[in-house]
Image (cartoon, rainbow, N blue to C red; front, side, top):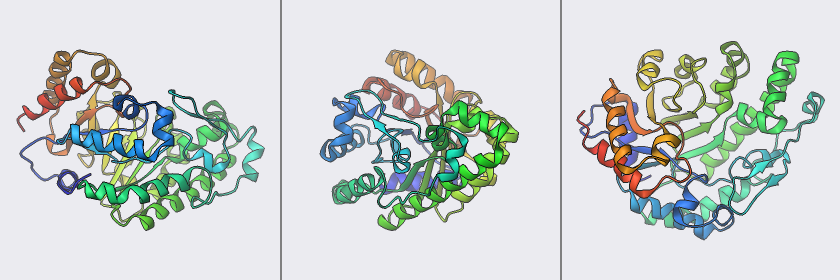
Length: 344
């Protein structure tokens, strides 16, 4: 992200009045490789192609903030790999991490990984450090430390159904699991900050938050997220594009100030539920509109979305979730055109 976009993001978080509505998208491996014209495995295994793809997208859409920007990742295998999860990679499909916890008793033997040495994490961080000179030569900076959230990682380590069942039957086991994962994530974000001084933001992505009720979130999510977001970062960014209705009111308490939701609540409902304390990055339907509609339809539906947002001072135009596969350049340009014509 360049300095202009970063300053625009900081201004939005402070609620400062702006002349133009900012545009931002979360982009990563489900969309960027194929948009660039390479296979997903090429994107993961070639630092050169990874860098070229990320440079190409900022050159193609200079008016868009791409978040977190130059995201070094290996899909959902990223964090579970540090716990010893078998990572399965296909040529052009999303990778998958196999479970490492086969019964709740296995949680007792789980140790906190070392993110400096374990799994794919050293490769992720070293890719950023090697690419940093070229990134900065292009006028960009690495701004965020990034990870999946603790509930998301727990679901990969033991399975989503198994996690939910254990919450009900053996809550102490789940707390032990969340403690291990949280300690790991705190260290992982610290290492990213120490290695790259330009980082002044934290992003966590956790859709499992949207699969539990309010009581379960308060017990198994809230205290651990509060620990993880207790940082000095200027931007505290959270993505959950599952149902946020059971948890949204707690996000300001956690420290979150930028949120990318799905479609279960409208932007106005999110602002109302949080007393306008969150900047919302949303919320055009990603798959059913941005990926599959014609450019004219994207333009029209974007206009409709924008007209419905009451508080545009706490709003960044985007889709509801990350950029989905198969979104075309033409559809992104139609989105940009509609936003640029929007009067604040």
